[in-house]
Length: 129
Image (cartoon, rainbow, N blue to C red; front, side, top):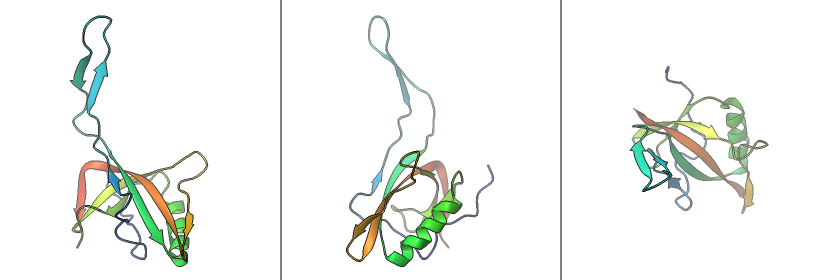
C-alpha cells in the first residue's frame, strides 16, 4: 500500500477532548457455535483496524476548515496526530456515522463540538517531526 500524504490540518485541534476519547481493542477471535458441546474459538487474523472515537471542540472558523477537509478525504486514509502519543501520527480512515452524514456538529458555547469515528490501521505510524 502506498502511504498517503494527506495530513490532518494544522489549524484544527491536534488532540481530541479528554472526555469521550475512546480507543477500541479489536476482536481477533472467531467464535463458532457447535451443534453439541462448547463453542469453538480460533484466531482469524493477526491484525485488525482499531476504532477511535475522536471528540473535538471547534471554533466557528475551524468548523469551515473541518468541513472542507472532510469533503477531501472520503475513501482515503490520512495521517492524524496520535491521541495517546504526541510524537506519532496514526494512519486512519473516516467512518461515516450514517449513509447521510459523516459527523454531526452540535452547538456549544461560542463554538461547536463533533465526535469523529475513525479506524486506525494496525502497525502503521509515522513520527511527527
